[in-house]
Image 1 (tube, rainbow, N blue to C red):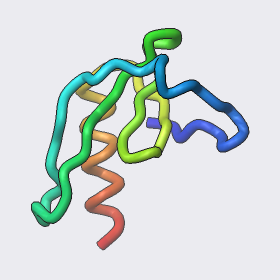
Image 2 (cartoon, helix red, strand yellow):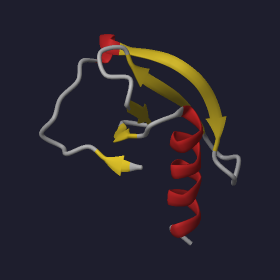
Image 3 (cartoon, rainbow, N blue to C red):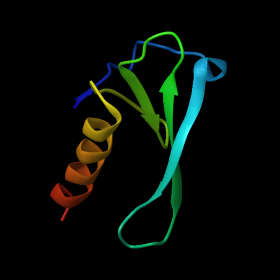
Image 4 (tube, one colour):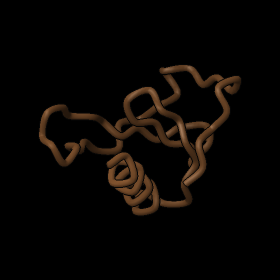
Length: 69
């Protein structure tokens, strides 16, 4: 998983809801979106990143959460 540079902008209307998830603490829900224009771009809670597949996107998000501890 690779984060996309801040300078790269993608309109909100270009995203499709892929699914929803819950962070391990259960305190907040987030929605996972996939770009309609570039299928390798994903967005979760205003964080845009690249992943080759939905599985890689979810695994990358889980790894980010675990590494925060």
